[in-house]
Length: 351
Image 1 (cartoon, rainbow, N blue to C red):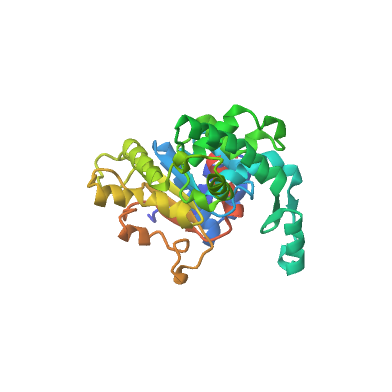
Image 2: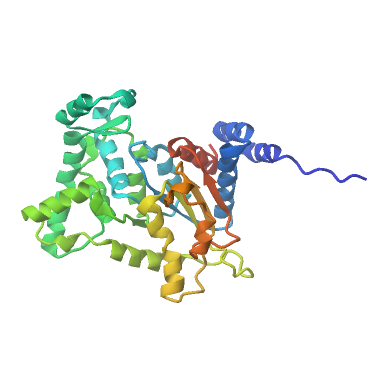
């Protein structure tokens, strides 16, 4: 008798989606090939990793906060689908900029046709453009600067030292910005992170708008101690401590790198490279060889591999650096993260 053929992947996906909402059912039915299939596979593996008791670290590059990723990411944090975040300084602050100045943002759908004079006109109006979206300097950047400057000065006077995200958490928890909220706070991923006291790392924070402002206030003498904001090296030390404490093999009999912490990477650059390097550092520099490698990996990227960029590096390259094992479930979705990430999150959330 001829063996019964296994069900097609699309049939398996639709069966899984029956317990979920309309977005997941749509994805399961339509996303069958190429990058769409990679999205489906990555989303299922993300969910499976969590169901096995794993944790997930998310790295966020690009301008995802200005793209309002918080609409889905905040709920991912609240529902314990994300357990730690490493992001650029821009993403840290731009979620809060949007929180207090959303109504003053301007969309420029014809940004591809702007000329130099058009750009200068935006500068004259203090509208800082990020692709098709202009962030208002006074309503967003200067308002947050004033709030966080109080925390910097207070900490410097008290001899305290905090990380960039900890200062932002203090501002949000103080309630001083509530009267300025212009979006539903449940759509701010930074509010969700502050409420969870989520482990966070913001390497290269000095490259951000607030990092530049902090430098200026140190130069001007408003902040008396430049060391009030803690550094990237200290961030790596806290990351090493968190990873060592949190990581454990999901399968005790398989000591081949299957760990309990997954890595979901949006974009590339320092937000992704900084945290993923903690594993080879623990293994090779600290000789903590019993610490598992990353147990899941997915990257959303549109970068081209042949350019030699970190953003375009395929997951297998990370095996050679001691970051992933040959058995780590690994995926790359070569697409626009503003389109892809919310769909992956919708699947994990069961929407």
